[in-house]
Length: 128
Image (cartoon, rainbow, N blue to C red; front, top):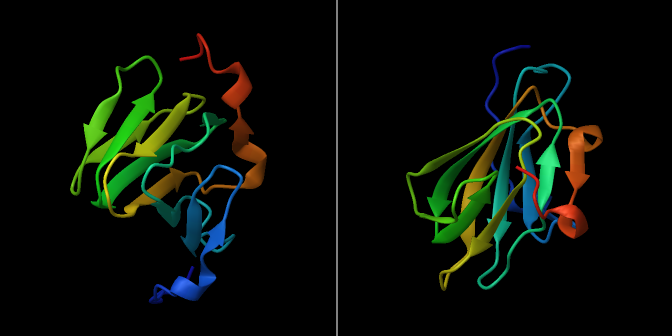
């Protein structure tokens, strides 16, 4: 890895089947230990239940108001400045319960890849 500055480019945003918009701000083989994505969830939208295998994820809430569900924890509201810690293989989803976009950084270690993502929307009952 070499020193660099990665500028946010809103034109890089793409929509995912998880029902949110993502910008992969830093996710490359040059820095395999971590990835950083900007996630955006529109008002009234809840992402799909999913889990990441072998990857720890952290949400850093930047803007908006959400309700996060992680593992066996009770649903909790999150707001700017809050951090959500999500262990590997732990079911998770987040809802935007506010009137503006919910924006957060999703920081994964090791870095995120499609191979670690599993949609469990139809099988989420009883999974922690």
